[in-house]
Amino acid sequence: MEFPKEIKRIRQRCFLTQQDFAKEIQVAFSTVNRWEGGKAKPNLIAMKNIKEFCLKNDVDYTGVEDAWLDFKVEGKSK
Image (tube, rainbow, N blue to C red; front, top):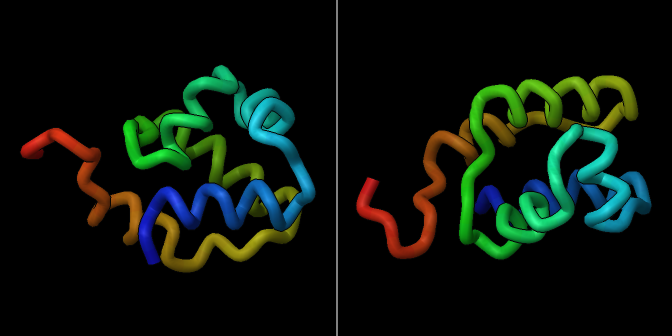
């Protein structure tokens, strides 16, 4: 699955707004918005916070790391 869709799935699984999810994982609302829009990719610290959030809230994390590794930000060649 595509990484932006995985982030949205995790957030919606817990019935959270982007703002509330951002607070839970200690990032700005605009950061979550960019992730879900495919405009940015979380760094390792954010990925650790996302994983901890999933474990704490019993949300399936299977495949999220692979989707993150495979994801290419729009407009970037890396």
